[in-house]
Image (cartoon, helix red, strand yellow):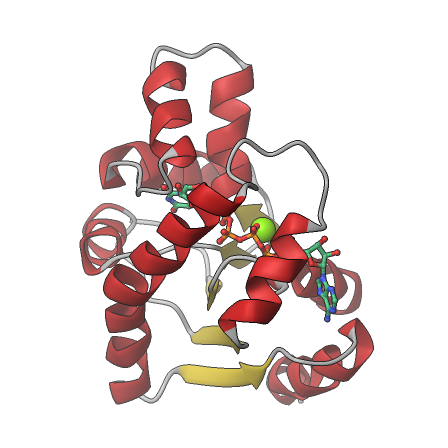
Length: 190
Ligand code: UP5
Ligand code: MG
């Protein structure tokens, strides 16, 4: 396991709740390294790696890529980085993901952010994003929402029970939402 004095934050929330957007602001203000699990997987697809075709199909179906693939990608980025503060965005998406990360990387998150907003708002934001993601169409979004509530919410409940969950109301402007996020990290700088 990693010997550095790590500070790990998991950033959870349904599709389009603003995880990536808020992570950028946390990076600017607090110097974290941002690792989006979805981005790492999309990078695997575009680099024509051996798993690329399977990952593409899984993402297009709104399903979860096997834990060993995702955990390896995250672990590699953590090992390559000299930073000790990480925002792990969009992971773990299932209890299986969570358990695999704990076993392989050997660390638990210090904090878990959970962005919460109504489904209609998530759908609207994802559909208007327009960045050519293969999963930003109404059929895949419905599947992503279903996978989120059935598999990701148990992870949210797990961290709530451990007292690590920080629930954020993700309705409002980017700045209004960030006003709830900032104090969570500022508290650790004291
Ligand atoms: N926007 C942001 N904030 C706004 C606000 N306050 N008001 C109005 N608009 C706002 O934001 C989405 C859009 O909304 C943007 O256009 C933004 O400008 C606007 P963004 O910050 O991108 O939201 P985010 O929560 O990051 O949405 P994203 O679609 O990335 O979330 P997902 O969790 O669905 O996607 P992710 O990339 O994490 O995963 C994609 C797929 O990869 C998964 O479905 C799955 O198939 C696979 N995957 C795995 O299998 N395993 C993993 O561990 C991770 C991913
Ligand atoms: Mg994102």
